[in-house]
Length: 167
Image (cartoon, rainbow, N blue to C red; front, side):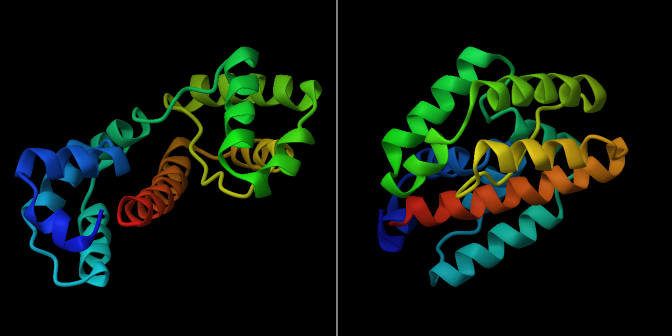
């Protein structure tokens, strides 16, 4: 979708498109209300400004828009799907052992029990082992600091999705 198209769709369609970038209704409704956008930079600036004003409930709603990685079957499917999406990620996916996938599933479960939300990480270009290491590194955090880290990771994901929306 081109920026001109984005500026001319119905508000409902625009909110639907932005909700695919971030599931926080506060974020996507506020972003949609700021159109028309003069440039991609102005769209990104508005996205940043609105995210900076978001609160915990907005973060949690955004996190809920991600699939839960909580069991071995869903992890195996996730990495298999990634393999199909991008050839440059194929090598990274093939390196994921069942031991790593099992450890990632357990870590995700432990994380969700401790923090009350799923593990959010900007996963593009990361191997399963790298994600496991990040998860284990973040697990000792307290909830307040982890919420801020997860929110920052969410915003990276959102910005990438905006780029994909406009490509």
